[in-house]
Image 1 (tube, rainbow, N blue to C red):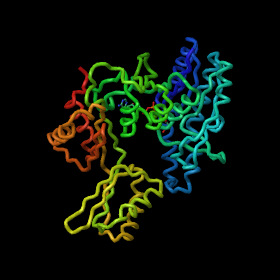
Image 2 (cartoon, protein in one colour):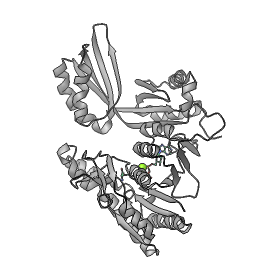
Image 3 (cartoon, helix red, strand yellow):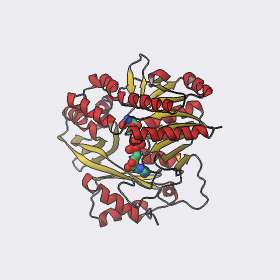
Image 4 (tube, rainbow, N blue to C red):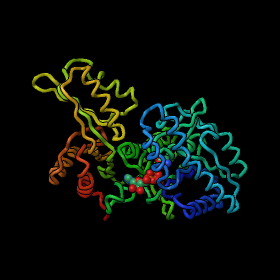
Length: 408
Ligand code: ADP
Ligand code: ASP
Ligand code: MG
């Protein structure tokens, strides 16, 4: 008998008919003799709808973030109840839980909280009784019982965390595509579904924008050695298995996938004096405001002044710009400029470790399409470039073909 944590995403729960189909999948697994704990996301685009309402009130202000979490967490509470009622109607023992009710304890960074601890007592008692626990993803409570959420797309992470503390055999992420593809199959028709992937490559793909998995889910599953399987709610295909091992005996392709994100913005402080401490002075207040900085580039000009450019998530652009306008004054910089219509594209593959020339081929392909590269960053197994947002799909398609990732 195996224990599976099964997480269902928004599209899989969009209507009552979808919820019924999900219930049938769960019952099928249980009838095969397996134990199941379920994690749900909110129905369809419900979290987007709630986030838009909050934005209309001006909830970007951090003093409202506690209330934003109270609002955003309601989406998952609805689906736990609807799915549990459906399971009971279909003859199962089932019980719904909010994050707080199963003691998913997080820190207090509202809207971006991190899971600290989970008490598995209730879930283990349910498993022992044959009751299917249906847990709300994406949410927890801090030590003072304030409701928190753990970042958009975070119900994958709830599932991976539960699978880890329960010692599950697999964490199964059910979604609206057949598995992890070489790139987003909605953008490149010829994208290929991977049968296996390693945690290492998946972590890069997820952190660089492949929405199909939340990067912290991969981090947790890798740390606790729980295999993740990404598979479709709408078919019986095996999906993509993500583990530590790289079982393929044949030589792997140099590039295993292309990730991209439109969710980017860049800010530049121009004419900064080239003296020690300036980078800390610029980025300190940005990080104090909980704005994550991604790529950073600094150039020293002949007159010994520097231009300092960095990227942030697009939703943090206004907050970062406000901070920079103040900081620029303090450090004696000439001016601040920004662009929130950029996108980032990354080639990922462990094969890059042993193959030179990937970067030059990438730059040539982008040049052939007349796409200007605004920023570049590399690590051992990835190369990322920033381009104007309007060229992102063209760039992904061109690189997908050039690196032989298209389906045969
Ligand atoms: P869910 O609501 O099930 O969590 P998401 O929308 O978060 O679903 O993630 C699934 C989507 O991720 C797919 O519909 C697909 O468009 C997108 N996606 C991006 N990159 C990839 C990739 N490499 N492989 C598969 N899907 C991807
Ligand atoms: N419902 C949340 C969101 O849309 C969490 C998730 O889907 O994973 O971000
Ligand atoms: Mg998701």
